[in-house]
Amino acid sequence: MKRFSMVLMVVMMVVFAGSVMAATITPQVNVTATVTGKCDIVTAPGVMDFSIDPAVAGPFSATVTASPVIRCTKSHPYTIGCASASGWFLTQGADTIPYTFSCPSNGSGAGYGNPITMAIGGQVSTGFADAPVGIYSDTVTITVTY
Image (cartoon, rainbow, N blue to C red; front, side, top):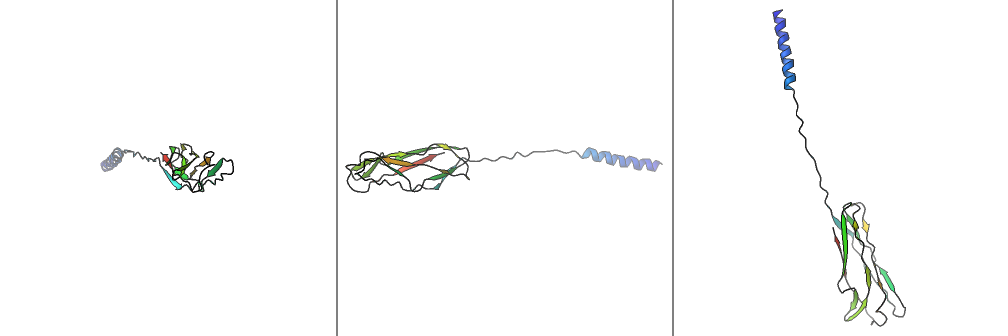
């Protein structure tokens, strides 16, 4: 009996000691991600070509052969600026024809899976009736700031 009591005591100590030693800790890892705000060009703009007939009163409107398309990070704001190399004049040497240009609007990205097509156009309404024959040109730079 003494032996049984001793064995029972040893078993209970082992069980009790095991439960005391079976403590747990729960460290945590914080996981984060940063999505950057970005825009890029999907389709570069085409050419805007006015066909001007000085015998017609005008105005003459034009759009680009391919509208510029951008894509930006979702909900990331962007601003658009347009600048003319010759101050909004079509030039041929010293001869000029004034024109207007509709710059795209500022906006907010729709996500990289949802490209944004920029609507641009222009108009010649004056200054063409006595313009000499020739090819007039200007370069417009569209700047997207994000």
